[in-house]
Image (cartoon, rainbow, N blue to C red):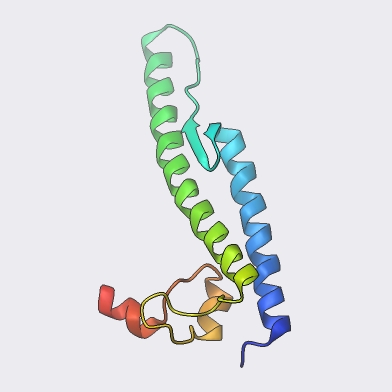
Length: 120
């Protein structure tokens, strides 16, 4: 499989769908404080001890999710920018091509498998 214009367009569509899903999830569990920066919501269940414990547990979950989603959003946006610049599918480490099968599975990949394995 080679990376032709249709392949890149398909990856772009997949990245845009992923971005929309990430933004929807962030809006559900976090508050936007700046462009591409969110803070996890702190819910208020009440004043009882068990309610306070549930609040803390929910906040910790939201905080972890928010950080993960922010990183994913950053990577998706970076990949979309590369599509616009005509640099999509090139390894950031060696400038070689990223395998199309890798991009199918992980459209926001930034490195080829050879370079990825070196960094592990």
